[in-house]
Amino acid sequence: GKTMLVQSTMMSDSGKLYLEVDLAKMVANCSTDVNQMAAKLKSLFDDVARYVNTENQEVVLFMDEFHQVVQLSDAAVEALKPLLADSGVRGIRVITATTPVEFRRHISPNQPLVERLQRINLAQTDRATTISILKGMAERYGVADQFYNDSLYESIYEYTNRYIPANAQPRKSILILDAMIGWHRAEGRKLDKYLLADVIYESEGVNVAFKVDASKIKARLDKKVLSQQFATSVLEQRLQLCVADLNNKGRPMSSLLFSGRSGSGKTEMAKQLAEILFDDDRSLLRMDMTEYANNESLERFRRELTARAWEHPHSIILLDEIEKACSPVTRLLLQVLDDGRLIDENNREVSFTNAYIIMTTNAGSEIYKTIAQYAADDTGSGASMKRYDKLIRNSISTTTGDNRFPPELLGRIDAIVPFQPLSEETMKNIARMKLQQLRRTLLEKHGVKVAMQEKVVQYLVEDNLDTDSDSGGARTVVSKLESEVTTKIAKFINENPGIYNIRVVVEGKLASEDENKLVSDAYINVVPVL
Image (cartoon, rainbow, N blue to C red; front, side, top):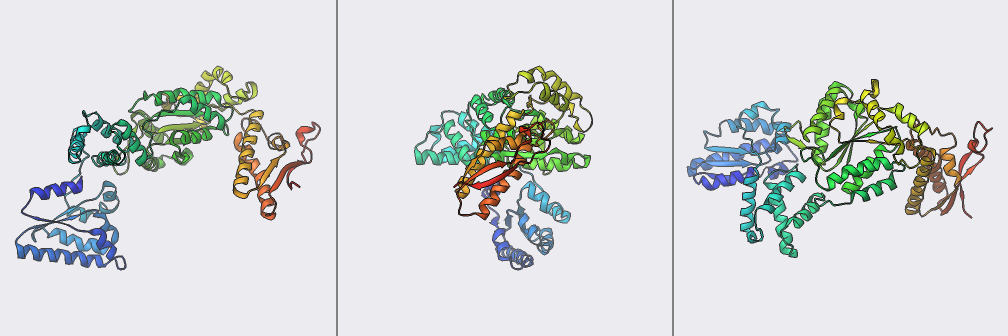
C-alpha cells in the first residue's frame, strides 16, 4: 500500500503539487551512460525549484522503486545526497519507496544516503482492514449483493495468507477478488469458495481443494518405489490427516524421518511424493546436510532454507543425511518443526506451514543389516519391520559418532518411516522396471525398438553385484545398468543410424550359473534384429 498511501495523502493535501518521477524511464534513457543520471536528477530538482519559486507552491516528488537509482551508478547517488539535504529549504518534499529486500541489499549499505531519509515501515493490513477493503471493492464493482456475509471475504484473507505467503496484504487479497469477479462476469460463476479455490489454483498452482484419496497415493507410490509397502502405509496414515485438514496448522503439514540403508528408496519416495502432491517433482527442495556440518554454516543454512521456502512454500523439503548437520543447524530446525516459521536475512517471517519436511538418516544401520540377513522381505510388507520397530527407534536415538541422529529432533517428528533393506528379487524387479523405462525412452527419442534378453536382469543383479544391505541397493543397480547397458546401446545407435530393431544379450557365462566359476566372463552385447 505504499503508492496508495501517497495517493491518499495527495487527496487530503491540496496545498502541494504531487508528482511521480518515472525512474524506470530515466534509468532506461541513461543505459548508454550511467553517469547521465546524476545530471538528470540535478536538472529535475532545479526545474522543480524554479516552479516552486514561480508558482509559490511546494512540490512533492514520489520516487517508486528507489533502489533503481542506487543500482545504476555511484555518481547518481552522490548527486542525490545534496539534493535531498537541501530539498526542504527549496520547497521540495521527496517520498521514496522500495521493498525491505531491496533496501537491505542496495540502500542500507550507504549510510549517508540513509541518514537523509526518514524510514517508515508499512505493515501489512490486518484481517479487519483487509476485509473492509474487499467490501469496498465489491461495492465499486457492483457485486456486493453476491456476498451474503463476511465468510467469503474471510476465506480470501485466510487462503491468501496461507497459500500466497510471499505477497503482501491487502494486495494479494485484492488480486484474488479481482480475478474472482472477472470469472464471475465472464463465465457466470458463482462467487463462492469453489471459485476461490479455482482462482488460487490458476494463479498459484496450489490445489486448495486437495481431496486425493490417500490410499490411492499409497498405490501410486507402491508402483514407483518397490518393496516398501510398510513405508507407504506409514505415509498413508499421515497423509489421511492432511487430506482431512486435521493437521496442526501452526506446524509444517508433516515432518517425517525416512530411516534405512543407502539405496533403499528414501530419496525416490520423496521425489514421487512431490510429484503426486504438487504435480511437479521440482517441488522437491533437496538439501544435502553434509554441507552444513560446521558451526560456521548456520547462517548460510538459514539463508538458503528460507530463500527456497519463500520461493516455493508448497513443497517437500528434503534434508538428506540429517545426522551430518552441526548442532546450531539442528537447533534452528527445532523452531521450524515447532512453529512452522523462520525469520530470514531480510527480517521477513517465512512460513513452512504448507511444506512437508522429510529428513533422511542412515542411523540404526546395524538393525537394518540384521533385517537384511534374517528378515528379508520381497514386498516390504512390514511384518519384520514391526518386530524391529522399537529396536530401530532405540538405535536411532542412541547412535554415536558420524551417524548420530540429533535426539532433540525425535520428539518433534510426526512419524518415523522405516525402509526395508532390498532383497535380491526386489533388485531384479527394479532392474526390470528401469530397463522397461529405457526401452520406452529409446522408442520415443530414436524410434528404436529394443528387445531385452531376460538374462540381462540376472547379469545386472547376480553377476559381480554385492546385494548386501551396505552395497548401495537400487542405486548400484541403476549405476551398473547405465554403464553396462545404456552406454552400449547409445554407442550402437550412434554408429548404426539406419538400424531400428536391436536386441540386448548377455555373451559368455554368468558366475551365478556355475558355482565353480569364481570370475565371470559374461558381458553385455547389442546386436541388430534381422
